[in-house]
Each structure stands twice: as structure tokens, then as C-alpha cells.
Length: 304
Image: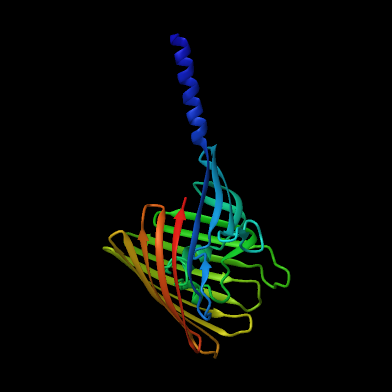
């Protein structure tokens, strides 16, 4: 009897060790609300933050090495339709990680987007309030590339990343980006550079964020050229303040291309947490592209 119990204990220990060596996580979010986009008079059911479902996993290979994979599908929950032209519109990657960092291949976010362009919009680019699309990612910046190779490394408070992709049809340059992000206590600073597929297009992004008490302030700028040699000038200012179970967001973004008039956007929003995974939100934004246009939304977001 004692031998049998001992054998079961040993088997249980091995089973626990085996399960600890690899993990697969199902995750996602579902977002729906009602509102009006800027420049329209129609009210509509809206997906404010890009509903998605994804799977990611890691396997311990021993010796400090691990295998990584992930893929993410985007969809419209009001209709069930696929969002975007490809099934795994979010990303689809496989790679290896270790003390050196991680190397991933596939369709993935660019280094400049993750570390620099997406780090300073208090709305995270989501809902009608999102600011990065009206500035830092509004022109030549590439949010994702396919057929790409990306490296990420973390060294204390310093994160570095770089990616390069296959030459695309009609392109002149292989698209690539590099970025550096530094975090120390309440301070976050980042710089990113994009070189898309054209002969002349490029974008340099830099930003800083600082947290004190319940508030966080951010500022970022972008400068570069379009493929038609039009100068790009971008700016973003943001703030978020925790208030009880909620958070107030506000910000301003602007962008100027060549000699065209400057486009401007200002937003204010509120997030109220019903739980750790369920949130109510509302936003109001004002966009000026020569004429003033308003937008608003009210919605519910559930993450899992």
C-alpha cells in the first residue's frame, strides 16, 4: 500500500513538472457599443477596440531555451464577420526565446509600433477617442508586417526591438523598424524608426510618459517623409487619471503633411470597471480637417 502511494506521488510530481514545462493560453476580448463616427450623421453599433480571440503558448526546451507561438483572429461581434482580409489579422508567429531575448517569425507587430507609437496614446488607439491614428500611425507607419523576422531583448529597464520583412510586391525597400524603450520608476521614454517599402518614406517617433500618484501624462512627436516627399509633422499629448473604480482619459493629436492644412483631434473619455474583466466606457471626440466633426460612443468591453 505504501509503495503504491509512493508511486502515485512520484507520478504526480512528474505530471506536475511536465505540465509546468509548457502552457497554452486562450484569450480575447469582446467589445460592442453604440455611437457615431466623425463625419457621419448615422448612429451605429460599434466595435470600439477590435474584438478578438487568440491562442498563445510557450514550451520549455531546457537549458534556458523556450519555444513560442501565437495567433490572433479579429472579428465583428455584432455580425460574426471576419475583420480584415486575413484570418489571423492580429498576428501569427512562431519563435524561440532565451537569455538573449526572443526571435519570432511570421505576421507580427512592428518594433516601432509596440515600443514607441502605441505607448503614449491614453486611449490605446481604441474607440472614437483614439489619438494615435490621428498622429503617430496616421501616415507611413506600419502597425504590422507579414513574412517578417523580429528580435526583442530586455536588459534591466531597457527594451530593444528590431524587425525586417520580405520585399513586398511593388516595393523598393524591405520594410523594417527599430525601437528602444526605457522604463525607470514613473518614467517611460521611447524612440522608434520606421522604413516602409517606398524609396523615400520614413518616420521617426519619440515620446515620454510620467506617472505621479493617480495620474499619467504623455507626450510624443513624429517626423519624416512620405514617398511623395511630403514632410510629416506629428504631435500627441495625453493624460489619464484614476478616479475610484474608473479612469478619465483625455488628449490632443495633430498631423501636418507637406503644405496641407493641419488636422487636429481632441478627445475625452471615461472607463468604469465593473470587475477586473468587464468595463463600461464612453468617449467624445472632435476632429478638425478643415471643418469640425464630432464623434461619440457608449459601450461595454469584456476581456478573458
